[in-house]
Image 1: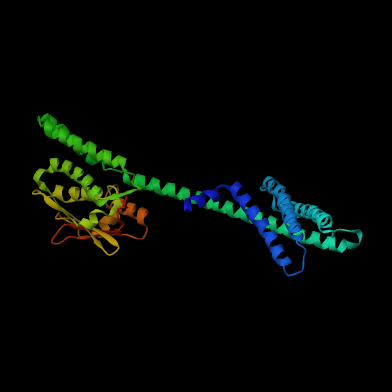
Image 2: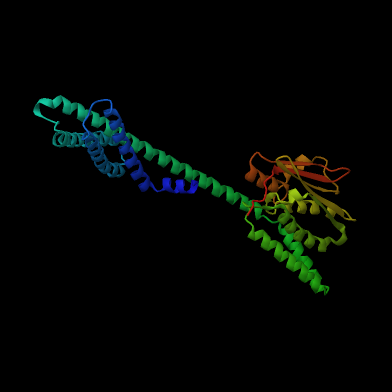
Length: 359
């Protein structure tokens, strides 16, 4: 229903004709209701309809005239509107009086100049009102167009920003993965190298196939994240442990695609890689009221001042994810970086809980 109404408003030509017909029909209806207060002959209804029809026809040329002078200086617009309204009103008054005389047997005669003047003056006001409405609607449509263009430009800039943030994959990940595959080939671990290449291909395909401005179920996000972790596990072997605790309700929540990967990459780089015996990355997700709460934690060395680390972070790390969330959710999110107990880093993200749309 909304789409049809919007399509109707977007078709300016059809919109004009509908308003034109409705407006003059309303003019005739008002005159008819006013005539009920006086004793009039039935033929007066025809007079009203003919008068409205004459006004309908006379205002059509005004539309095309106003369109031609639309971008002229204001003083010229005012002069043309007054002149065109006066000429149209005079012609309408002559037609109206001729109709009165021919149909109603009462109209313009030499001794009724005052009646003709009042009739012409009233019609001049009506023509001015029509012109005012035309320009008012035209200016409103122009402002709406400018607003739509501004919104579209903002949206395109918003999407470009998201894509820039989303596609800033850390080149170290690709270099390290390709080096690991090269090493596996050199030591004749071809099967493992092939599996690693397959997972890398699947991960990159997922990354390119999912637009950053769209959202996916958390379960699908976790599946893509496991592709990334499987690649990293080849490099770190048993040193990298992952613990996932996600409720069934949270699995269906909609989240930005691949927004967890930079956080996990950050934990691997600053926690797992610095521990000789490796460490554990824990991923938790649950629903709390109208929010989806995600917690990513590790047992690495941590940082004495996590907030300063977040402020200094750049690239595809913590700041990148925070910027994506801000672009997508505005003020309806939180990104908290704190010290994990007994040691390590803890990231808590709160975003609006959005359910998977039913198909």
